[in-house]
Image (cartoon, rainbow, N blue to C red; front, side, top):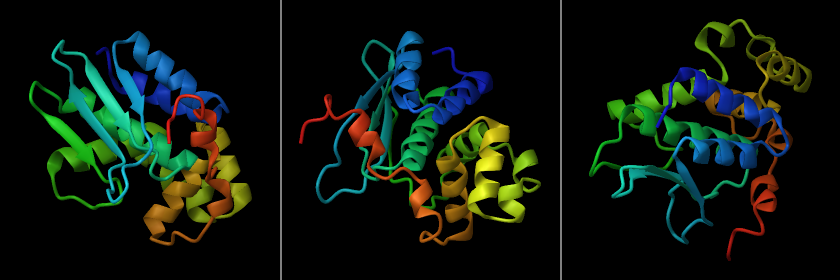
Amino acid sequence: SGLDADVMKRIARLSAESNGPRKAISELSEIGITVVLELPLRGTSVDGAALLRDSGYPVIGLSLRHDRIDSFWFTLLHELAHVWKHLDRGTVFVDDIELQSNDLCEREANKIARDSFIPRSHWARSAAYRNPSRGSIEETAGKLGISPAIVAGRLRFDGKDFTRFSDMLGPGEIRQLFSGELSS
């Protein structure tokens, strides 16, 4: 598939662009990875999936269950990590991103996704980590070249406080960006 750490970081940086999700899907298509977007199936908690087609080309499915910028990007990079590191014929990953798994593949995919956006070496020294605020989130995102929604989402997740910075996550923006392709 041509995936490596540099490609993962390049895709992550597209999060800073308003049309970044479309660009990411287009870039992935150019290296042979199909991304399929679907509305969530009622009663399920599936965020993403990764598998190989019979032809050997990878497919990533995203449910847009949480219609937020941070969720879209983290799920996309998590599934890309599976494509890069874990997929082989017959392997299928179906993920609920909110679950904390002890599975080594899931933990590695989470780590790769997190580090593609915000390297561990930068996170603990970042303004957002040291002094979480709207301004420090924007400053950290600017230095990293990523969406502030990613930084806000990371703070929420790490602190297990999902009430903070909700206004920075871009609720409703992903489905709106793809409204022509999604059926209800």
